Image 1 (tube, rainbow, N blue to C red):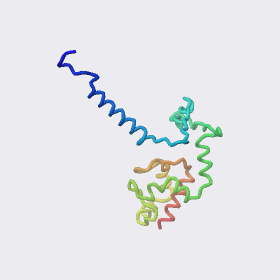
Image 2: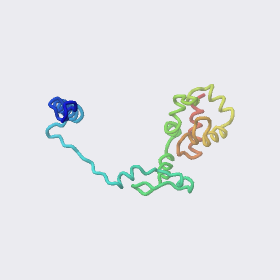
Image 3: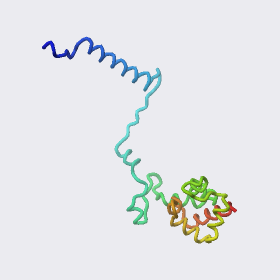
Image 4: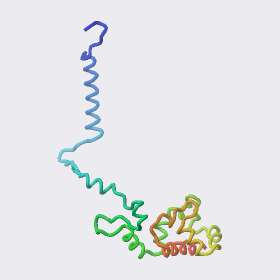
Length: 167
């Protein structure tokens, strides 16, 4: 080895590497993952099928085009059928809370707030059918059906709730 070439395993280099190793062990054991005596660490072994099931979309575009929804793993019923059954028993206030509150409760994206008589009087002048039609098809920043799976009767009930509580 020549005098100008640095030594790879010099005492200085070994000391630096040893120090870095100690820092890494300290970080790994003390800061990141302290293990206590008697503590059990549970390792979850997942199969590719488990992961694929979690990543599988609930509904695909092809399901929507064909009028189907993908079946749920447990129960075998369709997601839309289960959602419709759950929504059928909801009160107008629960329908409002489920789909409308996020925007109409806060005024997000310019949505008229529940209780804002001036904003709703203007809209009520168009008539209930026109408001329901706008809610079903979407208007402005509001997605169709308010982003819900509600049918037209449920949308009507939610719109009536908004109007009745904004006078």
